[in-house]
Length: 101
Image (cartoon, rainbow, N blue to C red; front, side, top):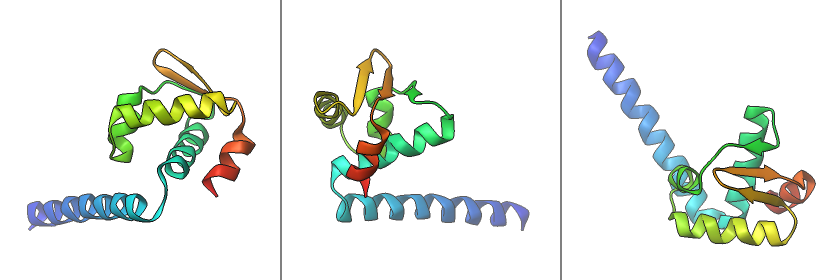
C-alpha cells in the first residue's frame, strides 16, 4: 500500500505538471511565458543574475533551445536582459513584468 500510494502521488504530480505546461503553451505567447519564467526564477534565486543555460530554459518551458535563444536576443535588444555564457541577467524587471502580464 505505501508503494502504491507513493506511485500514485508521483504520477499525479507529473500529470499536473504536464497539464500546467499544456495550458501555458496553448493560452500564452512564448514571450510572456519566458518573461514570467525569468521573473519567477529571479525571485526564487533572490538575484537578477540567473545561472541558466538556454537549453535548461527550453526544457522547462517545453520548447527548442533555438526558440529561447532567439527570444532572449530580442529581449536583450529591447534592454530587458543582458546575456553572457551560461547566464541571463535581468536589467529591466519592470519591463519584464509588463510583458508577462
